[in-house]
Image 1 (cartoon, rainbow, N blue to C red):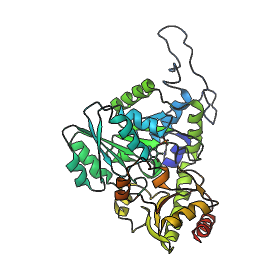
Image 2: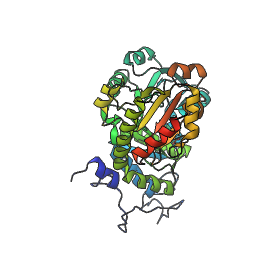
Image 3: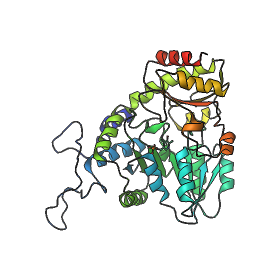
Image 4: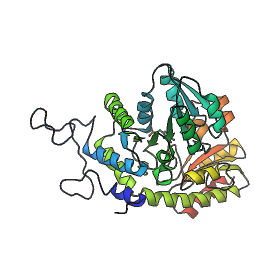
Length: 383
Ligand SMILES: *Cc1c(COP(=O)(O)O)cnc(C)c1O
């Protein structure tokens, strides 16, 4: 039976998967900590204790795995819990190469925790494959990238990275939060692990925190499951249900949000106070071609520079429909000030180098009427 991505958002893989015994259309919330056993050595339900596994979470994991074309997906209580568990794959003495433009929380995790545990990281411009190759050392174990990156929307060549990783026996880990599995599937291009902050496009309604680790290889899936059970940051049954409900509309949300984003990016380009627009859906974006070869869209995240800090602060203060808040990917349009909100823990020098300055704003385009969003931005731009 046909099983395209829109169908998988609603049903998961229709040819397999956990079915409710009462045939409920909406998979039930199994709000239980534990599951009974009939006798020793006999576990007919396959579930023991909810930290380890739970039917509602399992059902969600099956849906996400099917969207990413993964062997398995493991659901965590946040994107950062997913990243932290993944980093537990490494041991003291290991080295990781990361995109230099990265979610701020991941850089904090390196500085605060990985370093103390003897795992070191180098940040390189991963838009340049040669730069990654030059950073590989005998103790390098993985390449960790975001494409498009947060917040500069840099595009990294996934196939090129996968080839390099394979050649040197490294794990390729891709944070796929910004495009979601609807627009991009890094595992099919050679990545080993895909990470999601499910709090963003997957859940999609600015109401739930969650994270996923999607793995291509059964041995790696088993390792991540053991780490999730051991470190314990697994997703609750209710939150699993909320994310699953959100995913049912992922395809239509992504399409409309992208349609809105293209119009807004084009409008921004024409504004006198806008100095630069970073959106991979624009043909003028330096990563446009590569992104077009490895994904099905440019998504709905736009960063842009305005002419002065004064203008940036005025916009943040004057928006009324668009909300001044961190996070992204939900039904509501949000505008963020990366230098203060998402990247304050990145050293000033590094921020300047990357372009995360006090004139940079990041817009997550939501599902409102696009003319209303543009009208709101227009009045916020005015002095
Ligand atoms: C939000 C985000 C994270 C962290 O996820 P949480 O769910 O907030 O813990 C990681 N990577 C990217 C790209 C993000 O946007």
